[in-house]
View: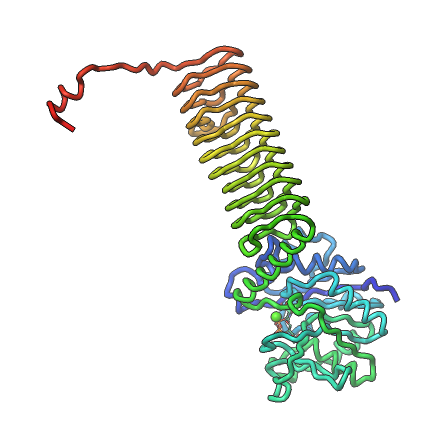
Length: 463
Ligand code: UD1
Ligand code: CA
């Protein structure tokens, strides 16, 4: 039989009361993705014929999110949450002729890996089982369904709330991940009762029903229990986020990235780091950030969906949607906003904010400036304290600065305005008219000296 599942069903209809949140549980994020996003990614790695997500609480939010994540996935509504077995029954309603393997995944276990699921499916298919469940031994099994065995045979799963003292002593738990044979699954789902502590149709009861029908039931102990943990509250969410952080950092380090302080380095799942990059402490790399070979990022950077070019150096910087060219230097205390593009070897220095601007190769904005809606050519220098006045109170206008320009310190460049190639401006100028190539622009601001003024004003011996 093929290892390719006929269907993967992800259970995501529950309310997640313990999160105490207006947001549906599976939409809470870690590592830059929703919990559902992580589970869908792992499910997709199995290449199922159908990917079904059961939605209920917050179904509009969840369905809209799913459509963005994975337009091929099908959302099936479970209007009332009558249990995990009920949810799977509804998911399979429209799929009467399904044959082969059906994999069921809890939507609130975001750390599950493709490898763990592939191993589960391989064992299931290899043993021609009716049910194969993933199990684990947790340091604290409180709250989980316990796995009752007779030697190697799994007899049944007993929910914590239904368990007696003997069962509560069992350390092995059901993680909620299952592989089933479609036909026997459908049959068992038709026989589930609600005669239990929660009055729900329990999916784990399929184990007992298949066992009683004399079908093969197998258990697979997870290679790494941490990959299977569920998130029911924000304490568990923070714990899962830390475990995911460690996994992501380890992956990058083994692939050639130097991470000096993994505990304070948070890298989202979709970030790309090339080998021989260095990430210094207290750095967050978010969204679709890419860091190219030889670049150094940190300490204290928060970069969102930003590209850092080869051998660039970015220190103590916040950047969002910026493109930093190769060998450019940024920081400390720089703020790059969306639409910022720095050319090769460009420099943005301390206390400089840049928005929707191109700063060409070798050009520098070294100190205390705002550059918004501007295009700066190559090898130009913008003096300390210069502000691009891009907003007239109603509209934004563009500023154009050519190649090899020298803007003096503390200028106001009142847009729309152009400074052509090779032009200079004096210190403290207000530039509101275009400056021709090679010219010097000054705006009057003449210094006067009034001799003896202090003594006349304040009297002798004044301090
Ligand atoms: C469930 C299992 C338990 C297992 C544990 C692992 C059952 C009865 N119990 O318990 O054996 O040890 O997961 O984490 O299956 N859901 C629906 N519709 C429903 C009910 C739940 O879609 O009617 C979804 C929830 O949104 C959640 C998942 O199913 O994503 C699991 O439900 P939850 O209520 O969290 O079950 P647990 O008590 O954690
Ligand atoms: Ca749960």
